[in-house]
Length: 315
Ligand code: UDP
Ligand code: MG
Image (cartoon, rainbow, N blue to C red; front, side):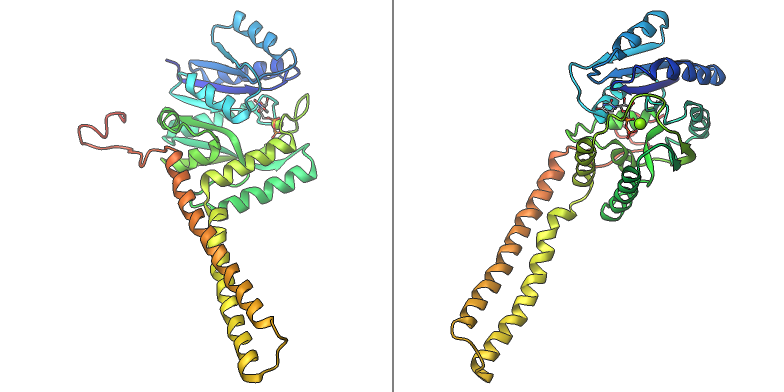
């Protein structure tokens, strides 16, 4: 069992691996604790895996997992967490956008007793205008529509305690949104700030398609608002319809200022519109409960207890 595991997902990073390893090693020397590196090769199409195998043959602390194809960044990190042995694990990108030297600060905070220390981006260099803009609004919207407190401007670069890793293993969700899951788990969480660098070499593995899928995973895993939308719209439309129905009847029978056929047509359209939306909303409510159950999350997580059975895993 190691003190620290460093989890590094790799997708076409041949230009970064040597420099990354060098800088990580420098950090580990300064830390002076027993550390392992877990490289997950997520179906790279370049020479990444050869480089990783080379490192592993020279350094006993290099572990690797080689995927059969590209499964995506979140799954790669999950595999790393499943197979690491550290008392704490750092998740870091391979492209040196997350400066390895910050691990010293993360580690120090972890030693103070925090179970999660995430790295919060102060500035982002070398990323396109659109990426910065979408990221900025995505995190803020997500924070508004979910019931948990997912920190804004934060990626997966963080240190997490073994307790968090063990809970994550009990959350076998198909759609991984790790930063949301980790916020949901709780315990003591804090952050350190840093300036995000530009990519050292190569190009982003997050295409817009992958980014949209990731954003949808985040929203659907932690918010039922889209499902509840039909219910809200249904009540709103029904309310408006009711007023319009009154008006249509008033025009027909009191002022007698009407076009033949208009009243019955309006009544039918308005009534059916409201009923349909409310029915969709009812289905949405059931689906939101179904999806919550299918996620299979534990109902609660115990920090400490003096009962025989519940507190067994805490020290
Ligand atoms: N990555 C991965 N699988 C993918 C895409 C990316 O394992 O399908 C890795 C990548 O090698 C890097 C990290 O995830 O270590 C972050 O990816 P990237 O830098 O491309 O994303 P960005 O920083 O542009 O959001
Ligand atoms: Mg990157």
